[in-house]
Image (cartoon, rainbow, N blue to C red; front, side):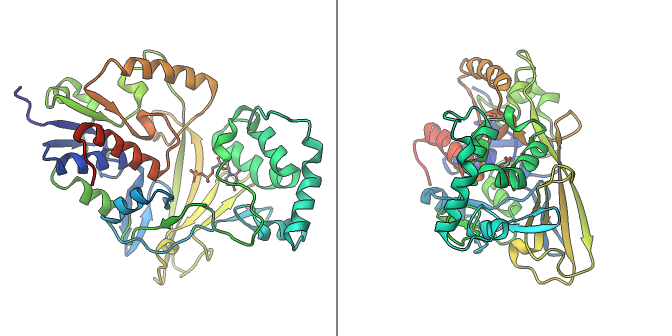
Length: 372
Ligand code: UDP
């Protein structure tokens, strides 16, 4: 055929970049396009006077998959940052995830035995819930009233814009109860922040491909379709199919970034605000991701809101209605053998970065039968 490229990759986020890296390595000619003014998708970090600002929200790399950890370490040095967010509720600070520190701060319990007894007492009245049908039932059965009402209900309902009784419980699986004094939010073997931010990783992954930013696939679909026999599509799957089965819902975020002329605002990278009435879910202080010593600081307040055409899609909404619609799009996608749909938007999945890399490498493996 007379195509100019072997692959066109729509979207220069993590999925697109990983696939591109593999394709270039396999000797393929690639064009990667993105409608934004910069590459990196929501991983994009901007270096502002030596602080790497996570412009689309905090990204902390963590995985237990050694292959994925080795893979990402080819593109950056990772520091030993450990995510230990705090929770602010009614002006009081607590440690997360739920561990012996949290229990001490909540109830004054000091030993694992005391904490377990307290939680058993809190959960007793929810024994009748044998098969939790939603996030609220799951959380109450697992941790009882105090933890649920202080840390979970308000945060969850403002983040998702839905009642906790309407949400699936897997959303919360990453905050289990822990009976040691350990504030490491994640349970994974490997964790860190790339020194210098995420944007250089994406840059180095797509080196060797042709890159066009400020380029909206949907404004010139027929043209882009003609450039390569195969496509990796990482945008919204509902938009790809012109919303023919209806729109999928996403939660969105907006950030208020602010520079402050003090060296430290909150003494920690992440502080959650767990009350429903506080309109933001967390404040990120970016310098702490890289142990910065600048005389000033940059903080970002994160406000959740419903996705509309003027905002960016962040989280898929995992409820019945959306899953039914998604199923129809997935079925339709099977007929497009020359297109791989990948990433948070095209797979409509609440992926972490390691999941995204794994999924992209899997597609590459099928295409090129090797991985490195
Ligand atoms: N969550 C919570 N309280 C917290 C932090 C998290 O209830 O202080 C729950 C909440 O349901 C949220 C989910 O855990 O939607 C995942 O939150 P996390 O901040 O870990 O996810 P991210 O937005 O970073 O992917």
